[in-house]
Length: 295
Image (cartoon, rainbow, N blue to C red; front, side, top):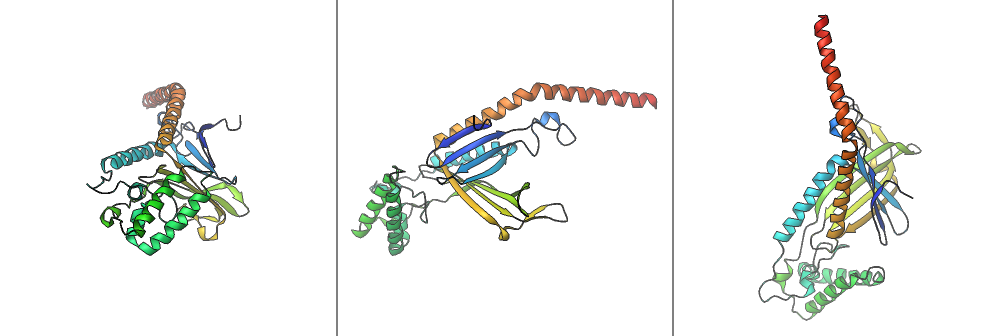
C-alpha cells in the first residue's frame, strides 16, 4: 500500500493523484465540534507527476471543494446552452469545429487561427501539426486535431475558407479556481520555504476541458507587521510546473469520490462530535447555574 490516503488517481503518460487529508476540528474556540472539519488542516492534496517523474503538489481546503464543483457544473451548463450552431449551408469540416487544446493557439479552431492572421496562423498551425505528429504514438487522439488542421490549411490554400464561420471559432479559457503563492513554512530548503500555486481551468470545446496546473518552487518568505506571509517570488529556485487535463467523465468521477470521502468522514466523526458538543453545552449551563447560585 504505497499511498493509504490516496482516494483518486489517473495514470497516463503523467499521473494525477488526490490524497484525503481530512482532519477533525480541534474543538477549541473557533474550531467547534459541529464544524466537522479543522479550519486549517482539513484538505485534499492534489499531486501531478510528470512523465519524467517530477512531482508537484498543492492543497485545496475542503471548504472550497463545493464551490469548485458548482462552478464546473455551471460551466458545463453554459457550454451546452451556448454551443455554437453551424450556420445553414456552412461546412461541417473539423476545421471549424475542432478546438486546439495546447500551445499558442489553444482555445481556437484551426479556421479561426487562419481567419485572424493567415500567414501567422499558417506558420503556427504547421508547427502544431509537427508537434502533434511527434507525439502521436503517446497520444493517438492527436489524430483528430491533425485532421482538423490539415483540413483548414487545405481550405485556406484553395481560397475556400469561410471567414464568417471561422471567426466564430474562438473560445475563452475560464478560471474555475486559483490559489497562488501558498507557502509551507515548515518545509524548507536552506533559508527558502516550499511554495505552491494551483489553477483549475475550463477549456470549452476541448476533449479534456478541465485543466489542473500546479506550480512548486522554493523562495524566501517574510512575515509582515500584520502577521501575513509574503513570498519573495523573484528569488525563487527549483521551480516545477505540471499540467494535467481531465475529460468530463473523469472529472465527474473525481467529484463523486471526493464528495463520498467528505460524506463518510463526516458520518464517521459525527457521533463523537455531537456528543462532545452536548457535553460541553451541559458543562457550560452547569457552570452558569453554579456561578449564579454562588452570587
